[in-house]
Image 1 (cartoon, rainbow, N blue to C red):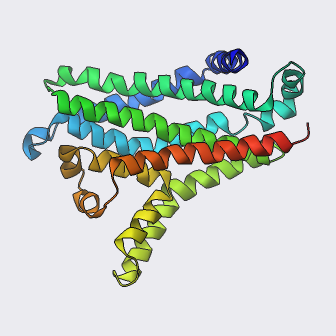
Image 2: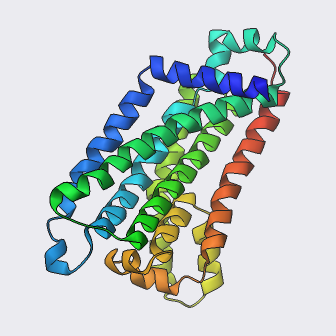
Image 3: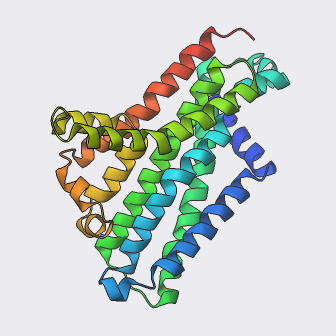
Length: 276
């Protein structure tokens, strides 16, 4: 376990040197603060709490931004080190390949978690400046949103590792990761919506719809933040979808965890069979 921690610490130090931590934190904090100040303006008119507006806004931002940051961090974790020759040097020490993979994953996840907590935390800290207040329920929803955002980031870090373990050069890894980002974040939901419109409720049952939603980690994340807290669900404008879904919070969290474990296991298997 000491080897895993050492490798994780090395990845964190490298991310700090490469300004990944600073860049991700400033980007998330800047966008979160912008959404906080802009989104708090209409709350008195629509009767929503300011923190609920922030949660909905940040959830929408997370679906697009966190997966992209995670894939950019992780896409060359394995293939990049192989091209630079550092992987051969690292494996010359008494360390197993799964330890290398796990250490890198934990290091990158720590970087992403730090940037998310600090960046989004700035949004909550700035709310009193706007004259808004929040209660324990709102804080619980905000904390759940941050936690689920980290889980979503871990999903795409794991997917990036799977791509990095399979391909043979960094360019291919970057192209595939961008393609996966487009497919899971943009194309999947548009295709699903078109399918539902064409079907008109004839063949796609509620259970099949739930299964289709769980096949996309961004949909599981979105539903978790919509269905877990009533005020957020009502204000989000997607209360109909949240109400029609029979997926429980536990099922959504389980889906996100499986989306982490399955690609990570695939990356470990591909890395163990790969020649240096």
